[in-house]
Structure formats: C-alpha cells, structure tokens
Image (cartoon, rainbow, N blue to C red; front, side, top):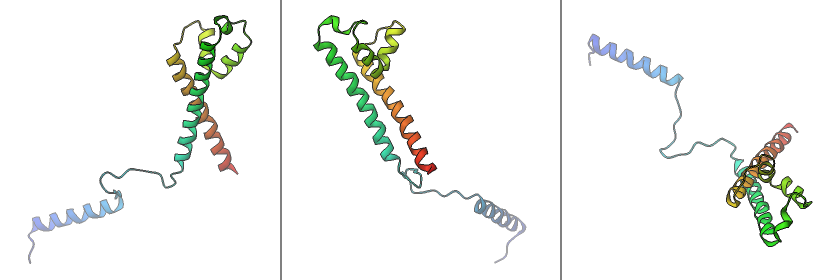
Length: 133
C-alpha cells in the first residue's frame, strides 16, 4: 500500500494529535454518571445539618404554639420568657430590635435556616477538628 504526500501528512498529523491527547486525556464515565468524590462521607453531614434545620423549625413551632396558647399579655417585652424566645429564635430578636414584623411562616423558615447555618458551622468545625487529630 502506497501513501502519497498528502496521506503521509495526514497520517503525521493524526499521530501528533494522538500523542497530544494521550498526554491530556480526560477520563469520562458512562453517560448519566454522577461525579462524586472518592470518599463520599458527606451523606452523614447532610443528614446532621437537616436535623439542625428540623430542630430550628420545631423550636420556632413550639414557641408559636406557646404564644397562641397563652393569654395575650404573656409575650410582651416585660415577660422574662421573651429573653429565652429571643435567644432560641434569632429572627424574633432581629424583628424586635429593628422594628419589623415577621409572620409565623417566615419565622419558621428563618429559624430553620438559621439553625441549618449554625449546624453547618458546627459540623464543619467538628470535621476539621477530627481531621487535625
């Protein structure tokens, strides 16, 4: 089999391309495969952060039930239990000090988000401390 000059050039270019792509070759998986880190231990952390968010939702829900169940003057600024409410529900603290109202649903959502953020910080710090040991 004889190659003409153009065939030799094409063959030479093909070999150069093969050598180049052999050096910078990317490994692709099957279609639809997800990219995951080698150590997929993040499932437990996601679960724990979800538990933190659930705890925040439950705390705000319990305070809402308490506020609805007690007589109206029970949740005033003179009530000592309001300090505990402000501590456990940061959105209530912000709404009282910056003078804006928050509905029950937004309070539940904001408290769940705040607790999830706190959980993310705590779990990340715990993970870093365990790695340092």
